[in-house]
Amino acid sequence: MPDYDLLLLRFGEITLKGRNRSRFEKAALSHVKALLHAFPRTEAWKDYGRIYVVLNGEPAQQIIQVLKNVFGVMSICPVKIVPSQLDDIIAAATSFIQDRPEIRETTFKVSARRVWKGFPYSSLEMNKLVSKPILESVPGLTVDVHHPAVDLRVEIREEETYLYSEVIRAAGGFPLGTNGKAMLLLSGGIDSPVAGWSAMRRGLEIECVHFHSYPFTSKKAEEKVIDLARVLSGYAGKIKIHLVPFTEIQTVLAQSGHDNLIITLMRRSMLRIATRLAENNGALALVTGDSLGQVASQTLSSMNVIGRATNLPLLRPLVMSDKEEIINTAHQIGTYDLSILPYEDCCTLFVPKSPATNPNLNVVERIESSLTQLDGLIEEAVKGTETLLIQPGEAINRDSEEEPVVQEKWF
Ligand code: ATP
Ligand code: MG
Image (tube, rainbow, N blue to C red):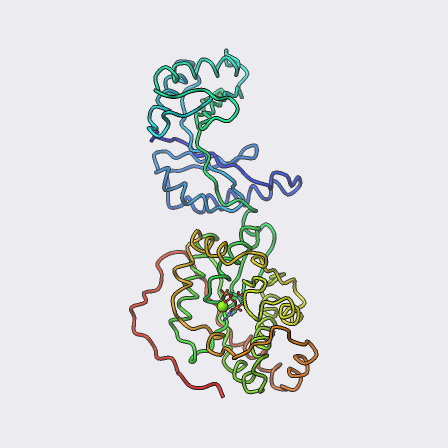
């Protein structure tokens, strides 16, 4: 493995967005700088649509793993820096390839670029001058100028020359917060954390809302959701979570006697509360982990009746994704193992035998207006919401004593 000196970070699609470009690049750079606090010798700046991170001896591989999570960054190239002298470039390029034993019996090419026009050899001449000694010294290597397995870039600048070949994919999307703020309805399931990460990748700042039915749901279940928020905070630096007491609303809805509509009714109340919290916290949209057809409450018909409980845009990043794709992303972003912990959610406590897949909006609205106490309870739930600021770091120790879940019936 070559000893890298610098990381070169490239932006994705944001470079296309003319006027916003500078704002986006600044946001990505400040995210990078925040993550580099843990590596105090590094220096970072941006120039012409790239971010440069000088390592000054800090560990390249570890930093790459961290910076891969910066939204808006499309790729990372680890770079070796050499003096802009022909002999130095040739010697370093040769050992750059020799030091990587995986590059044998394969195809390669050299792509030189003369950024500094004062350098005495043209790019074409450099391609030949650099590739010749490499071909002679590395067995089994052949040149393929069209589809090489290894493309060795030689970027010649006045002060120094950059050598790099590896292009590591990063998160892509838009830098954090550059597209505004949204409220994520975060359950303890697999889907909503993935939806939250997808929303963040589109440049949304996220605050989380979680509905709990303590004491019917346990403190452990709540800790699990806080831990999920903590994983998400690793992509944002910090994240707020609003914990909403939902027990009374759930009890009233359960007592209304409309078994098959209970999930529809619960979701609508959740959306109302989340909308109020969004308004109070300057968020302009709600995000959920709904995926079309996955369960009864996620049929088109259910989504329609549920979605009408809010005037805010309801964003469902996973709506067209297959479960397998969602699970893959959950593994990738580090939420899967937490999501499958077997703590109950307020909705799993009460699963009707035959939940409505085709609820009727008029019927649902009539039930709600017959529940005269509902508006007041929604108001109280908003007032009783507890807000925590979560930061990356140690997960909650789950070995602490469990508080008993009250296994009473709902009605
Ligand atoms: P998830 O895996 O995210 O729980 P799911 O497939 O289990 O999703 P549902 O349980 O029907 O689906 O929930 C649909 C969406 O409603 C969730 O993705 C989440 O956004 C929201 N939601 C459900 N329960 C809660 C809760 N207790 N607190 C906050 N949001 C919730
Ligand atoms: Mg769920």
